[in-house]
Amino acid sequence: MTAPVNQEGKRRRHTLSDIFHERTNFDIIGRPWRWAIVSGVIILVGVLGLGLRGLNLGIDFKGGTQWDFTAAGSVHVSSGSVRSVAQPIVGDATILIVGSHQVRVQAKNVSQAKQTQMVDALAHYGHVSASKVSVTDVGPTWGKQVSNKALKALVVFFILIALYLSFRFEFKMAVAAIIAVIHDIIVTVGVYAVSHFEVTPATVIAFLTILGFSLYDTVVVFDKVKDNVPTIGSVKGDTYSLMVNRSMNQVLMRSLNTSFVALLPVFSLLVVGSWLFGALALREFALALFVGLLTGAYSSIFVATPILAWWKEREPRYRALRERSAAQLARVAPGSAVAPAAPAPVAAAPVTASPDRTEPGPDEIGEPVEERATGTGGPRRAAAPSGAVAPRPRQQRRRKRR
Image: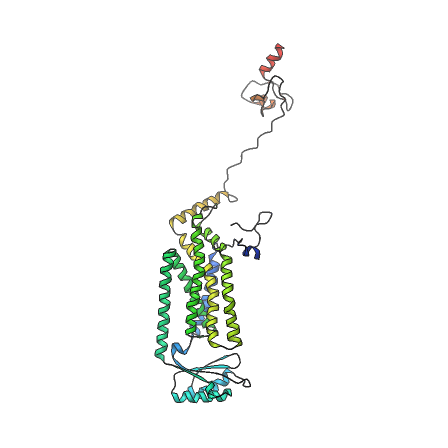
């Protein structure tokens, strides 16, 4: 696949038609530091948010009591007013308001009497009946068990993926894919830390879902790379990195289409389900999916594949190929030492053949009389007019006999 060129043979900008018909030649591998900077900045922001604010863990992980209710339309709901109702009963509490009327209050584990008192106070505040206020009570032991199970599920997931990719492709591809998955987890956790959205079991389920999608996109790219390995060397100056770059351009449209189609329903779930209808569970699940799908599509191309190319280039055979390709390109590069071109041949003067001969003699081909007269190889004769050809001695003898 060649880069789009114009009539003068120069590269032109890619168009949407080039992307759609897979005629792109983006230099993705050529400058991996660009993607390293982008990923590094995003991860740094997430780590700072995690260190300064931490994760907003739900009661399923840390234990506690939670109250959910939807206030009447005539009530103006705010975090401050809800806190003023809850604080005298349960002390410090976390207030979460979705939309304008759906309210969630979280606090540490309290007695049954205080739970009932809190239900009555919130029902009075929201102008609803006590039966409309739901209560969820989770002990700290249960939250610890949920956290341990989530961690075990993640470890088992990594082991299975490493075994499958090592068997399907090779060990280096498996390591590059797992690094990309870890990248996706760190980015998603950083988004939750910065936004301070609540982390619930639905978030963990979404994590596992997005990891699977990220690996799917990575496997598509790696499969094309594996198919193109036999083509290394088919292009002058070819290397393993250039082959990987060709492979990614060949599957770029497929990756974009897959990611776009997957993001559409998730975006609808995030906007319509959570922000318009106020479904908190949908928001927690949809946000993790949305961020994970974006980072998964990004990491499969800009994280996993550049790491693979960098690692494979360290192998002796691909390192030798790279050095040989660099030497080939240096010989044809501008300013390099190039063998001088042969001088253009001197055009011979027109020759009129004698009537007794059918083809010109060897002395008549490209050898003017002036050059023979000034040469060093034979007797000197007077120079004939320009363009004339010296007659052969045999011709002179024949003319004398006539």
